Length: 161
Image (tube, rainbow, N blue to C red):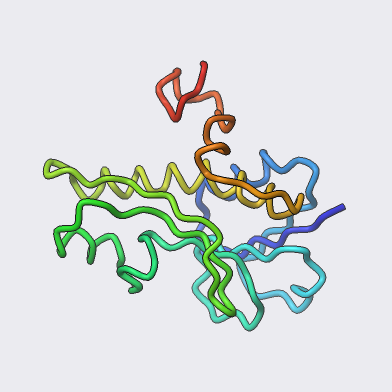
């Protein structure tokens, strides 16, 4: 059985999304750095605030390499960009796994864009981790067409609900 370690400092719904969608995986959650991280197939950083000396998967709220900062969404909005998004990547060495763009309209508010990024993180993280664990290739557009979580009322990402 595959094993994932989720490192977090603050609970987010992304943790529940990963656990519920990857039922075939043993998942352990840690709010402090455990000594046995090397025993896991994947180490996932949700919002862990401490330094980790092991390659792990993380998400950044911009399309890297743009706005590689502590507050990327704030920096993107202040710069007036019209596209931002999520970057999923391995940390050491930094290797981008996937990126998903979102558009920022002139009427967008910071909180609305942040909520959209948080929602997409919950949707995409489990899908990406599943493909990595199964060693299967993927394109996000194909993942999303099959990635309904049933709570959208039919309005999300090509879902049939």
